[in-house]
Length: 158
Image (cartoon, rainbow, N blue to C red; front, side):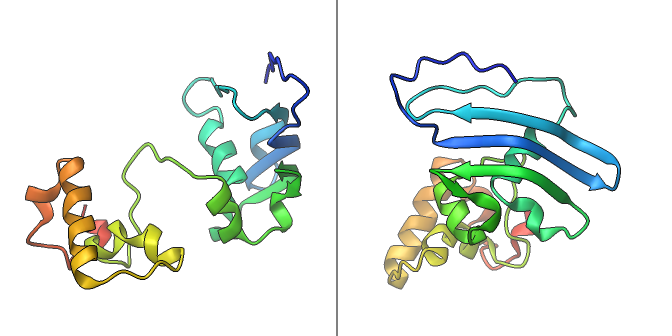
């Protein structure tokens, strides 16, 4: 990974040190990646399909914790803290993840999936406010007409 930087003395917001990620023993999807990512900069992770870009991002976000066969080695620091020893929910609050495909929580309803960010962060809302957020959110992504009558179906329905 090439790093072209003009940091003006800033400290890295994200540091990767010799990060490797394996789905099966001896077969690395990400092999020995090191990089410093600085605040207020644009960083691109580029490569062909299947080279490990998304795997690396999921590793930073601790999404692999959900799969016991996935092993992450090396060091990942976010704002100077070791991501691999932090509470996973805290990491996910600090480092968001954008997925290529829809990725709803499969056991939650469509309605609850839309509100997940609020509930996972302990934000309490009244029923009217929840309904408004759900409607406006789904309208903004052109899904409202498709799902307005099936809000109680699981997110995997999408």
